[in-house]
Image 1 (tube, helix red, strand yellow):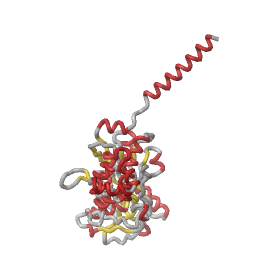
Image 2: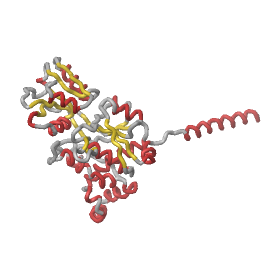
Image 3: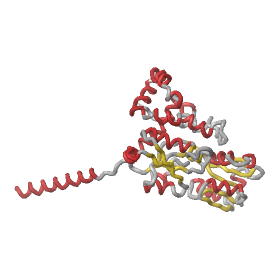
Image 4: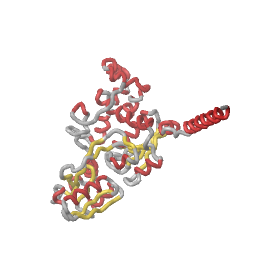
Length: 337
């Protein structure tokens, strides 16, 4: 009997030790790693007008995607962002390898990509279209039989246009490039008849051409491209930080909290004093939701900074899914309570 009891105790001790070792070796969340490092390493394109590009004067990385990198850093109270330029082909391997903390790079959420990485909330709803020279006779997909098509490789754009051509039994020549900017130059240099990618990028490349009137965006959207940040799988603490950083700037627009108001205690108190949701937003998590707004503004301010009507890269927001859900769009936060 004493031998049986001893054996049982030994088994329990071994199980307990194994559980302790397993707990002790549990991987650290990237949230803790980034805070300890004091720098967020954020993957971007770095060559896409409007989304991420070097400021012509300062050389500093700016753009819609770059601002969201800063929003995440502010939400977790980290003061520095290191930007890493990634191609379409290198962005997912960089996330999987852990060489970047998060990627904001005009990346469409798809089920096959979700097998490799996790996605945050959609920051921009887009759709694929065509860019041609102004004197081109191409006005849509039906005019592409025999066309030479420039596209950047390894993207949903490449797959979408291939599917559309095969569905029509069209002859076509696909000319692929590593970057969207190179594909646009392919059109400029006459290597192809049409350049295709997300409509927002086409509008931005056209706007930054030496003579934008030389080009036109044609045809209807023929794909759904919800663009979102991506990060390593199975790290819920880090996923929550990225998600709530995005939702914070969206909720701030819903609440009417602009960058100027977030920086003004008296104007902020006037809003939080009459709106319990705004009060929660300002107080929960030590006011983490306000930090991105103070730094880069709310969602509408970020959008207008790069795609507003006064910008060269203007893209209409009214009537699209990029409007707030409370105004008929699809942009919505989560309850802040």
